[in-house]
Image (cartoon, rainbow, N blue to C red; front, side, top):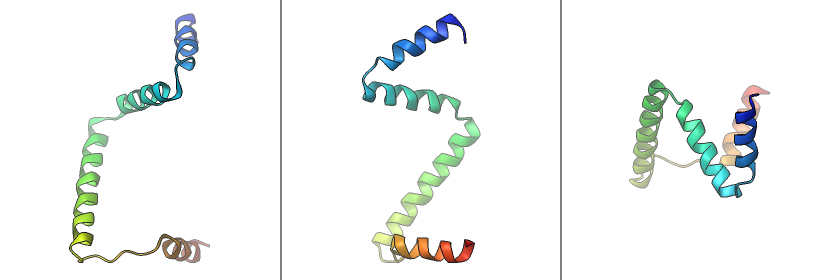
Length: 76
């Protein structure tokens, strides 16, 4: 690792946790490709559509423990 990178890392690690988390999020976001952004947008729309359908009574909720039990049974 270059000296500059080490200095930057040292400086970043002195930041408060919230500032480090914010910076980490920005850095990770910068790695997203246009394709990934498109996929993320489509999933966000799908999630909103499902929530609205649930709120209209068109979809039923399933308890998380039931879902986990089904998955464990299927994949065990």
